Every structure is written in C-alpha cells, then in structure tokens.
Image (cartoon, rainbow, N blue to C red; front, side, top):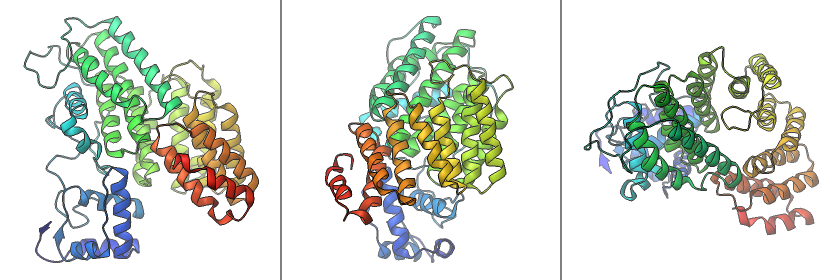
Length: 456
C-alpha cells in the first residue's frame, strides 16, 4: 500500500450516503473482487486505513467504486471515492493499442493479450468500468491498406485476399459458438473462440479493404466478438465482457452496420442492469432504440425494446415500461423467424423479459405466468436459458408461498443446469439453496438440499 496525505473525506461521505459501515463496504469489495477472480479478505480495519488516507493496491480502487455504484445506483469513479487512478491504462483502452487505434487494431491487441498466458489472468480480472468510453454511431471506413509484415499482434497465416469464403466461414462460426453458449454455458469453447479470432479472423480483417466483402467480414466479426462477450459475461468476467461488447460496436461502425451497433449497446444495457447500474442501463437502452434504423428487422426491434422495458421498470417508469413491452410484442408478431442468432428473437426470450419487467413493477402473478410461457417456448437445446428461467420462477413461487411447486421447479433447474459451464447458473444454484433454507424442516426440501450441491 502507498500512503497519501490527509483523510479521505470523499470515501467517508460515500459511506454515509450508502448507509454502510466499514465492515459492509469491505464485504462488498470482497464480493466484487471474487467476481473477477480475486480472493480478497478485507475487513473494517482495511477500510479504516483507506479513510485515513492509505491508497489501496492496484485494482482495489476500481472495485470500491464498483461496489458504491451498485449500492447507490449511479456511476462512482475511483477519484469520486477519493483514490488516485487504479491503473496506468486508460479506461476502456485495450492493452497494447493506442487510444485512437482503429477497430481492427484494438481487437488485435485485445485478443492477443487474451490468448497470451502471461497476460490472460490479469486481463480476465479486469473490473467493470462505469465510465467506459464507447464509440458513438459514426460509420468509419477501414483503411484500404493491409498490414506490413511488422504489424504487431497478428497471428496465423498471411492471407492475400479476403472474400465471400471467409465471410461465410465466420458466419458459420457465429452460429456454432452461439449455439454452444446456450447448450453448454459461457465457459464452453471460450478459449477456442479467442484463439480462432486471433489466428484466423484478425489476419483476415487486416487484409480486408473497404469493399462490400470487407464490410461484410467486419459485420460477421462483430457478431463473433459479441458472442465472445456474452461468454465472458456468463462466466462472470464483467470487465472483459464489457470490452468485447465495445469492440463489437467499433467493428460495426467500420462495417457501416447500425443494427449490430444497436444490438451491442443493448447488450451493454443488459449487463449494466444485471450489475444494478440502473442509470447506465437506461441510458444504453434508450440509446440502442434511438439508433435503430427504420429498416431494422422486427426481431431486432423486439430484442431492443424488450430490454428497454426491463430497465424502464427498474427505474420506476411503469407507463414507459409497458409501452416498450407492447412494442416488443408487436415486433415479435411481425418477425419472420430465421434460425440465426442475429436475425431471430425467440418468444421464450421475450417472455422472460416480460417476466423481469412485471416483477419490477410488482405484478408477481403476471411475472410467474410469463415465466411459465417462457419455459413452454424454450428450445430443448437452450439448457442455460431453461435453467435460469426455472431459477427466477422458483424465487417467485417461494415468495407466493408455493413451496412444493417451487421444489419441483428447483428439480427442473438442476436437470437443465447440471454440467453447464456457467458462473451465472452456478450463482443461481447457490441462491436457490439459500432461499430454501427457511423450509429445510420439510422432508421434501430437506431431501432437495441434500442433493443440490452439484451446482454450487
């Protein structure tokens, strides 16, 4: 630790606003650290040192800021908490890439660090950034010149010409990895996708120019980066997921693809909502809808407006939430479902978002009904979605006092979730165990508790 002069009055003021004791802040920081793979054991004494002016070690100021951001529902930076910058890296800048680098060079630096054993662990522990700079919607034409032999970070075999074959190959990879995420969880084949981006896709991108094929390659590559971001998000690596979502947005700009850009911003809204950054989630959700072009497919409009309904409900905008939900419903009815992760929005997903919206608005009965509909529409291959839907339904049933039915849904959760490589599903399983503890005297619940350790 490095001592600083004077007391940290900013941190003291945030503690008072959050109505936290020093011990409560320490617990919140430990939890945030565990989410990015750091085994922390701070206590009230540690916080006392921070209050007296001691600067925590690297990464901790960002975790303190993240803990306060979740508690207070607004963006708190390390400096707002009275700390100096936690890292020398610029927030949101990928390792090894200049701040003004184009999308492909930014992606090159990121995936090469991600596949480098010397940097991977540190990168995967990157905390979520409440003020991550995002590329605004502004189509940027990629450079027509390919890289030289000295271009850093490019792996794989040099390709002299990129065309329809490479575009089709990346499109197929998008469908394969997206399907694997639903079937096996975000930890499945994640390293393989990183390596594929580094060894194949990045070299193709560097050798593609501002042609129709080049722009199409950037679009499909943005989709692939989006899938990788979802994998990291499902694994609980929120900071790295956020960087990849931002990378997908930059590629969409170079592809002149406003639809994919909006979808990535929508995903950032969902991530922020999950972390309880409500204002950020709302801003991203509104921005995603505002940026959709008139010709956007109905399924994409449903995807965006359903998320907007969720965050509007979280911010107590009942009329706005219900209006967005109705818009999503109409768009789904108009959609021509195609078997592709970026052209179809399943009814099961819409019903899940409906349940989240109604739950936030206090309509527990409506939320439970929507979850039942979501389960009915789930594809058998979507094991991850099935497990997470069951988990939410269990909590609602327990809240309504339907313990037996909740137990049956817990069994369904275990069947769907067993073997999934998903930190999110694992967390849901531990949450269900805690939720059933008050009912452990009941024989059925006792038996479930004794056999539910496989997902914990």
